[in-house]
Image 1 (cartoon, one colour):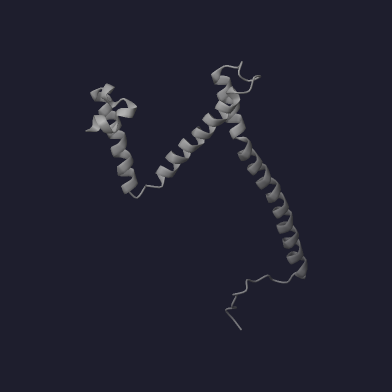
Image 2 (tube, helix red, strand yellow):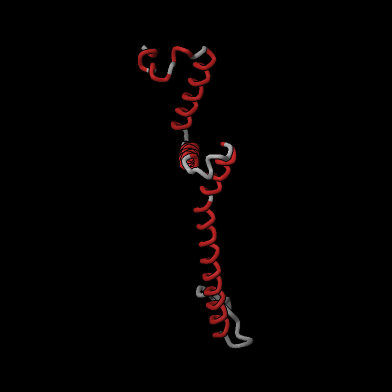
Length: 132
Protein backbone atom coordinates (compact mmCIF):
# COMPACT_ATOMS: atom_id res chain seq x y z
CA UNK A 1 0.00 0.00 0.00
CA UNK A 2 2.82 2.41 0.84
CA UNK A 3 4.28 1.76 -2.61
CA UNK A 4 1.13 3.04 -4.31
CA UNK A 5 0.66 6.03 -2.01
CA UNK A 6 4.24 7.24 -2.36
CA UNK A 7 4.80 6.13 -5.95
CA UNK A 8 5.29 9.69 -7.14
CA UNK A 9 8.54 10.03 -5.13
CA UNK A 10 10.02 6.65 -6.04
CA UNK A 11 9.67 4.95 -2.66
CA UNK A 12 10.17 1.51 -4.19
CA UNK A 13 13.83 2.43 -4.74
CA UNK A 14 14.52 3.26 -1.08
CA UNK A 15 16.80 0.98 0.89
CA UNK A 16 16.01 -0.21 4.39
CA UNK A 17 18.39 2.37 5.87
CA UNK A 18 16.51 5.15 4.05
CA UNK A 19 13.22 3.85 5.45
CA UNK A 20 14.75 3.77 8.93
CA UNK A 21 16.20 7.27 8.63
CA UNK A 22 13.03 8.89 7.34
CA UNK A 23 10.85 7.11 9.87
CA UNK A 24 13.15 8.24 12.70
CA UNK A 25 13.00 11.81 11.37
CA UNK A 26 9.20 11.71 11.18
CA UNK A 27 9.01 10.17 14.66
CA UNK A 28 11.24 12.87 16.13
CA UNK A 29 9.17 15.64 14.53
CA UNK A 30 5.98 14.10 15.94
CA UNK A 31 7.60 13.70 19.38
CA UNK A 32 8.76 17.32 19.28
CA UNK A 33 5.28 18.49 18.24
CA UNK A 34 3.76 16.66 21.23
CA UNK A 35 6.35 17.89 23.75
CA UNK A 36 6.49 21.17 25.63
CA UNK A 37 9.33 22.29 23.33
CA UNK A 38 7.12 22.47 20.24
CA UNK A 39 8.18 26.09 19.68
CA UNK A 40 11.41 24.66 18.24
CA UNK A 41 9.38 23.54 15.24
CA UNK A 42 8.87 27.22 14.40
CA UNK A 43 12.64 27.58 14.01
CA UNK A 44 12.69 24.48 11.84
CA UNK A 45 9.90 25.70 9.57
CA UNK A 46 11.27 29.25 9.60
CA UNK A 47 14.60 27.95 8.34
CA UNK A 48 12.85 26.01 5.62
CA UNK A 49 10.91 29.09 4.51
CA UNK A 50 14.09 31.19 4.55
CA UNK A 51 15.97 28.66 2.42
CA UNK A 52 13.02 28.45 0.04
CA UNK A 53 13.24 32.24 -0.35
CA UNK A 54 16.99 31.98 -1.04
CA UNK A 55 16.28 29.27 -3.63
CA UNK A 56 13.69 31.48 -5.31
CA UNK A 57 16.08 34.44 -5.43
CA UNK A 58 18.81 32.18 -6.83
CA UNK A 59 16.45 30.90 -9.53
CA UNK A 60 15.57 34.48 -10.46
CA UNK A 61 19.29 35.23 -10.76
CA UNK A 62 19.73 32.29 -13.16
CA UNK A 63 17.43 34.04 -15.62
CA UNK A 64 19.53 37.21 -15.68
CA UNK A 65 21.97 37.11 -18.62
CA UNK A 66 24.75 38.90 -16.73
CA UNK A 67 24.54 36.61 -13.68
CA UNK A 68 23.94 33.34 -15.51
CA UNK A 69 27.66 33.18 -16.31
CA UNK A 70 28.48 32.94 -12.60
CA UNK A 71 28.81 29.60 -10.89
CA UNK A 72 25.94 28.24 -8.81
CA UNK A 73 27.88 28.87 -5.60
CA UNK A 74 28.34 32.54 -6.46
CA UNK A 75 24.66 32.91 -7.28
CA UNK A 76 23.77 31.40 -3.87
CA UNK A 77 26.10 33.85 -2.13
CA UNK A 78 24.50 36.76 -3.99
CA UNK A 79 21.01 35.41 -3.19
CA UNK A 80 21.85 35.16 0.50
CA UNK A 81 23.23 38.71 0.44
CA UNK A 82 20.00 39.93 -1.17
CA UNK A 83 17.97 38.04 1.43
CA UNK A 84 19.86 39.84 4.22
CA UNK A 85 18.98 43.31 2.86
CA UNK A 86 15.60 43.49 4.67
CA UNK A 87 17.31 42.48 7.92
CA UNK A 88 19.97 45.17 7.43
CA UNK A 89 17.25 47.75 6.73
CA UNK A 90 15.35 46.73 9.86
CA UNK A 91 18.50 46.93 12.02
CA UNK A 92 19.35 50.35 10.57
CA UNK A 93 15.80 51.57 11.21
CA UNK A 94 15.91 50.32 14.81
CA UNK A 95 19.33 51.89 15.39
CA UNK A 96 18.18 55.27 14.09
CA UNK A 97 14.93 55.04 16.01
CA UNK A 98 16.79 54.13 19.21
CA UNK A 99 19.01 57.16 18.74
CA UNK A 100 15.92 59.39 18.61
CA UNK A 101 14.42 57.67 21.64
CA UNK A 102 17.63 57.96 23.64
CA UNK A 103 17.80 61.72 22.97
CA UNK A 104 14.19 62.11 24.08
CA UNK A 105 14.85 60.08 27.23
CA UNK A 106 17.97 62.08 28.08
CA UNK A 107 16.08 65.38 27.57
CA UNK A 108 13.30 64.12 29.85
CA UNK A 109 15.82 63.20 32.54
CA UNK A 110 17.46 66.62 32.27
CA UNK A 111 14.07 68.32 32.71
CA UNK A 112 13.29 66.18 35.76
CA UNK A 113 16.71 66.89 37.25
CA UNK A 114 16.23 70.65 36.72
CA UNK A 115 13.01 70.57 38.74
CA UNK A 116 14.81 69.65 41.93
CA UNK A 117 16.44 72.36 43.98
CA UNK A 118 19.99 71.73 45.10
CA UNK A 119 20.31 69.92 48.46
CA UNK A 120 16.72 68.75 48.35
CA UNK A 121 16.44 65.01 49.01
CA UNK A 122 14.84 63.03 46.23
CA UNK A 123 12.30 60.45 47.35
CA UNK A 124 10.18 57.94 45.53
CA UNK A 125 6.41 58.49 45.39
CA UNK A 126 5.80 55.76 47.95
CA UNK A 127 8.37 57.03 50.51
CA UNK A 128 7.16 57.01 54.11
CA UNK A 129 9.50 58.59 56.70
CA UNK A 130 10.21 56.48 59.78
CA UNK A 131 10.10 59.41 62.20
CA UNK A 132 7.54 62.21 62.14
